[in-house]
Image: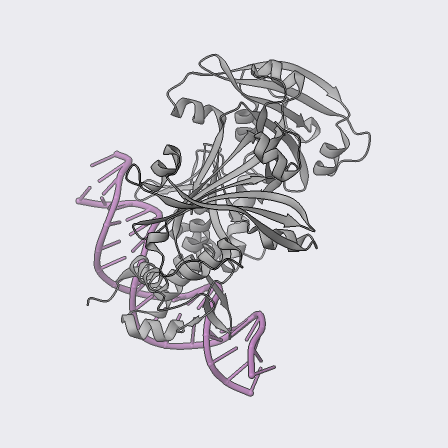
Length: 228
Length: 228
DNA sequence: TAGTGGTCTAGACCACGAG
DNA sequence: TCGTGGTCTAGACCACTAG
């Protein structure tokens, strides 16, 4: 049989051997050097293939100990964090948004803690409704640290997209959960009170400075997908 | 200033330049060759750094066109797909589970479609309640294609973990959503009917053969986190 | 301390795709 | 067409860690 060529074919071959149970969970597989000899390629090529599989959670690698097939069924998936406008347009619908209200206030303790703020510090709060073909798809509740921004945001664009262009790359964390719609949310999202909403919460920093904390409540039916 | 050394320092330097807006969203950055010359390293080292950033959604790369700072704020996050037992034990609680019922039946159309089954084909269905310190944390509803398994599963272990050890690596897809608890689910999870539940649905194949489709309904308060 | 993975180099050729 | 990223090689040295 023709040996695998290129790191992608090697990755596929390794997966095949794991699937066929030639290499069982917890077992140590041959070293990079041995595999390179078997496949007739450079060690760097094998290394690349195994590194990708380790990144996906399929293999566990440690110096000196070697490479093992992962025992714990912890798989890693990559998730494309969605942008509402692109999601809506991807479904062939017209995107729109409406600013519900805007205020300066002291954020609730949970938000202040997430952003690492001193108690009592005031932030700007924007609530925006995102629309698909005129119907609400998500309610955005954003707390924004205007102090760190070079200029105030304009009123006529999506705050999210303006931020991305202005503050550029940021680090952050994201969490997903399910919550029942409050009466207020239900009214805005045109859904029954108490409906199960999919919630994404994102907090971002630029370097050390906390920028913004966003809570998105998605209208019922929302679904986040990925592949393992 | 000392030039960055190693692909990780180069990655950090690139991020710094994006953060400082030396390189703006949409702009083309220097070629690998130019950066290698600037940093005094091999092109492969620059390539590695830029590849990682492209994988994270920070850069967009195309042959001939070069490398640009990503304009669309689509970030990619890696998600550790949780294993309930490990999550529970990680919180310092005692893990347990209880088999609710088991049957052979024709799955609902949605499940059959996800698994790519012929209409009318029967599968085994297991419903399991996962417990943390004796209290329910998640309700598992699993449809299992016993025909493709080498041996029937034992009754006394977690079905999920047995599957992982037996079928080894599988491909699959995952989706997340929010749903209101049905009366049945509410009873089992000891929560009010209609409560907002976080739902994960996973379908897996081993090669071409569909193995299993699982729906996990998490008790209220569940939260899935990741970092960008 | 020795074995294994992690990384770097200098060079080469290839594949894609913008102009 | 030809510039750019994508990959491979053969070799080298380093970093971590199991025994």
